Length: 320
Image (tube, rainbow, N blue to C red; front, side, top):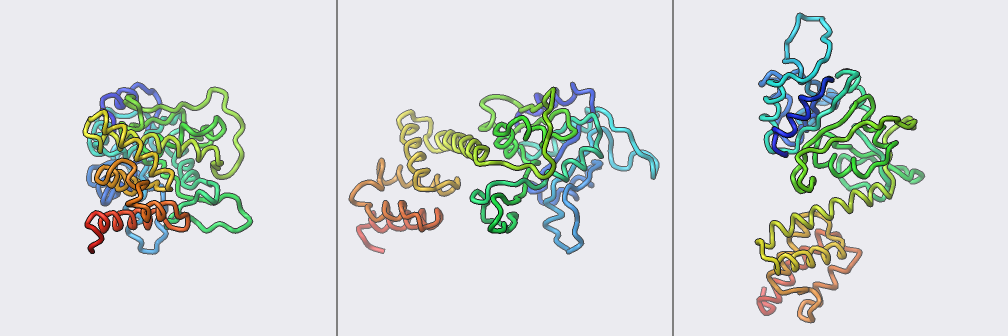
C-alpha cells in the first residue's frame, strides 16, 4: 500500500460516508481480527451454513469508518457519516503494507453500498479467458461468457481492472458510490500514492445484470499486468546493472512468447537464461529445451519443469 498519509488525507477530505472493503484472502481470519479490534463490519459473502470455515474467514468485509462495533442502543439505525479519523487510522494500521483495502465514498450510505457490492462479487468474462480454478463456474457450450469471482477488495486487482473499463462499465462498478479510492503496490501506480476513480458526471444508462468484460478489456488488463511484471522482474533480478537489465527484459519477453504467464514460471525462465547464457534455449546445445518450450500441447508448468531438468542434465554433461 502507498504511504497511508496520502490516502488518509484524501479520505478525510470527503464530506460523505466512506467505507472500506477489506480483502479477507490476505489475512488468516479477517472476521475474528475485525471483531477483536472493534470494527463495525458485514461480510460480503453469505455464510451458506455448510461449515466451510475457509469461505467465512477469507470473505471480504465491508467496514464502516464512522463508528465502532456496538455503538448506539440495540435496534437503532445509525445515519452514516464521514470517516472518524481515529477509526480510519486504526484500519490503515491494521491493513499495513498489504494491498488489502479498497475505499468507497458513498453518499447513499453503507447499506446501499453493501447491496451493490454484493451484486458485483461476480463478473462475466469471455469463456476462453476463464482460469482453471475453484472460483470459476462451469460455462454451457452455448455461452460466450462465464462468471468468475471479482476480487474487488484487492487493490492490485482494482488497479488492473478499472483502468481497462469504459464509462458504462465504470458506472456499473461504482453503482451508488461517488468514488472508489485505493493504494495498490507501487509497481501498479507509476509513482502515484493512490488511485481515485470518480463516478462519471453524466453517467450513461447501464444494462441490467452482471458486469461483463469483453476481449478488448482482457487485452488491456493483460497488457498492464505484463508491463508491471516486466518492470518488477528487472527490479528484482537485474541487481541495478544496466546491461543485466536489458538481458532480463529480453528473457522476460521470450518467456511470454512461450506462453509462460505466471510469475514463478517467468522468473524461473529468466534465472535459466542468466545461468546458462543469453538466449540459451536457442543454442544447439539446448535444442530439446526449445522444442518443449514451443510445444503448444504442454502446460506452462510442464514446459518450465522440462527446461529446468534438461538444462541441469546437459550442464552436467548428460549425467543424472
